[in-house]
Image 1: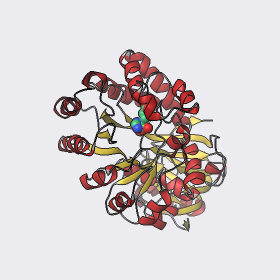
Image 2 (image 1 turned 90 degrees about the vertical axis):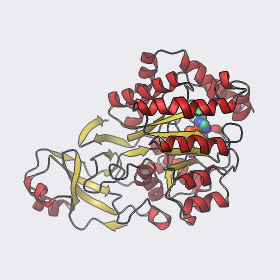
Image 3 (image 1 turned 60 degrees about the vertical axis):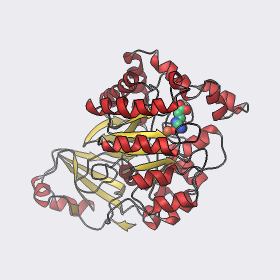
Amino acid sequence: MTTIDRVVAADVAALAAGPDLLVENIGQLCTLDAPGAGPRRGPALDDLGPVGPAALAVAGGRVLAYGPAEALRARCGPPRAVHDAGGRCVVPGWVDPHTHAVFGRTRQDEYERRLRGETYLQIAAAGGGIQSSVRDLRGRSDADLRDLAVARLQEMLELGTTTVEIKSGYGLSYEDEARMLRIAAAAADMVGLRAVRTCLAAHEVPPEYRDRRDAYVRLVCDEILPRIVGEGLADRLDVFCEPSVFDLEQTATILRRGLELGLRATVHADELEPFGGAALAASLGADSADHLIRIDAAGIAALAGSSTVAVLLPGTVFSLGLRAYAPARAMIEAGVAVALATDFNPGSCPIASVPLIQAIACTQMRLTPAEALAACTVNAAWALGLQDEVGSLAPGRAADFLVLDVDDYRLVPYHAGRNPVREVWRDGRRLVSR
Ligand code: NIG
Ligand code: FE
């Protein structure tokens, strides 16, 4: 980490002409702006880039410059607006690269059943789990699903998320997957969140295909994905790769088809058993491999030697009441690019709070507060292929930032369970003030 000791500007002439907004009196600006290509790996994950008291200039919705307040004022023409951050900490808006935020009913019945001793897989085998959310979603109106999604995404925004990935996967037919993706986009738009839409038609085999699983894989490849892509409804595709869901060969078939259609790829991998999903994701050039609770040494080595980001979801382990978290330290030490996400969904993780995920990552996986912050911002942006847009406050990036109600970023995980976000800004406009 370095101190902010000079002005870093995207466009010196534009700065001299005067920014749209000057954020002054920032007690601790965490820029996450550091040289080097690629996501943060190894010791670089613990480095927040230039950090310290600063001012931030914004023009056209983008970061124009940051620097020590007096030096920036001296180089800057008259700002059209000035905002006082009150000596508080300013960080990039959180990027949450893995959520299932469109769903109908919540599943607290299953939560209680697990607490009484049943496992996630036993409940799924008895018709609960994903299947129960599929039945529920298929019977709900668009307006109902949209209102529920808007309320959930609004809560995420108030907790500091400015970019969110939203998966389908509770439809499992062309019509219902398309409906989910349209609702995801509309709801995010209404709330003001930047959204990435992921088609997860391969989340489970729907009941009508129970005894012909390969026929469902063909339906996904030959009909669902081409139609979704044809209508421009998704940016990425995802597959739940597990022995009891889609095996390695089925996963590879679906991923290859999606990539061929121009989608980016991600995989739910090595969550319940070490199964080779992470290595497959790396070999196909997926953006990310997610979960990885049971990843083995070969999977870690495959990710370390690839551009695929490991998205860890410790809120899921916590919410399921399990003991074993993903081996985050071993992955970081091996040079894997690690990011964090909520996995917000009605079954395995009802946590929508990125600050709480940072707290769980610190105490349960031994990330440092700086590593957790980088994993929820710059590396999470890499996991979505949005590294040139969001995830850091480098000049030129979108002016998506949070004014926290604390003066030290380490207080975010330290105060586990509270919302440390006071203001949320996206594209240089304030969306939340608490
Ligand atoms: O990421 N693992 C599969 N999908 C979700 C769970 C979805 C659900 O239970 O509804 C997950 O944990
Ligand atoms: Fe998930």
